[in-house]
Length: 413
Image 1 (tube, helix red, strand yellow):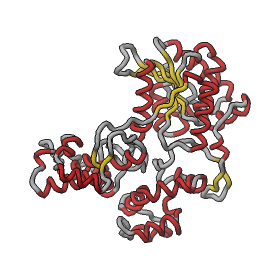
Image 2 (cartoon, rainbow, N blue to C red):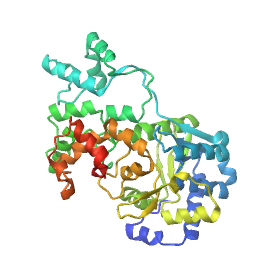
Image 3 (cartoon, one colour):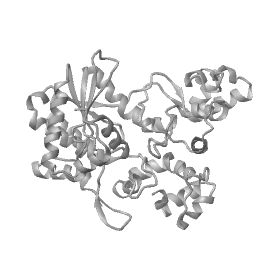
Image 4 (cartoon, rainbow, N blue to C red):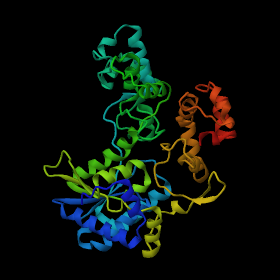
């Protein structure tokens, strides 16, 4: 099924009727089952797209679907409506084949980011950087830095609540502390290292790029704690752990090329079915994306035509920036702001549909990082309504934080 096509062809095929897309999806699913040597799985999010794909497989491949694992990635920051729906449908449709993948736990005590910064500062002041830095100025490892702390420092960190205890779930807040908040898209958040490693890289490394665009990126990183690592820790790693446990060699995903430029590019290059690998397999591992050509309109047409259940999340309403009443369009993680700067962004909608969750995320660090990002010269607002933001020193300004949160929350949109 490696049908490679250009964007023009993708756009043409996206205009085809639903019956054509159902036919191509069934062909892709059949190809996925055909290359399976062990066991297939469905990546299920509780969203409308993966629900439709699950229905397609159940209806057209009933025998094969009996042995298909269904892996629901519970990130810990799911919308409550989607979490309840996913578990209910998993019980009804999946039974024993339904598996909930959750983030791993820490295996030992480890300092929080503020404590890591204190260790680094102490090592600088006592001329002990050679213990933790490589010859090029990069940090040898986070563990090396942590081992350099004295017993007295560890005791102090514990007394001040600056230690992640062994057995802590690597949740959204752990990711935000150790890596950064999910602000800006994946193309912007290029580094997957711990934040303390990035600090050392920016401060000491002699291997930083001299390219102008990367220099701008470094300027942002110096001020703003951003990262996309939560996708790996909360989604990818838990799912792959379950895949390894069950020996999965083909995974079906409900990805739409229409959702993003990146997904459209991947589909153009790879087609419906492409080969990969997994450490636990001697044979190839395959990714199958049967509904890549579908649009949101196709998904809803299919749902209504076949009376497919869907998460009540999509019935929640909000007012968009044009003043129109809309329904929720996307499932996802509460606290994700990778669409920063776009109209009707995730956080703009969250503020209306789940105000308590919005407030918790904002007041526990996300707002502060957004403020710093908006002050950066590369992201400074140019609308006159936002002029105040461009000149405020808000890193430690509680009054400004309250003003942004309570008086003008639209500044975050």
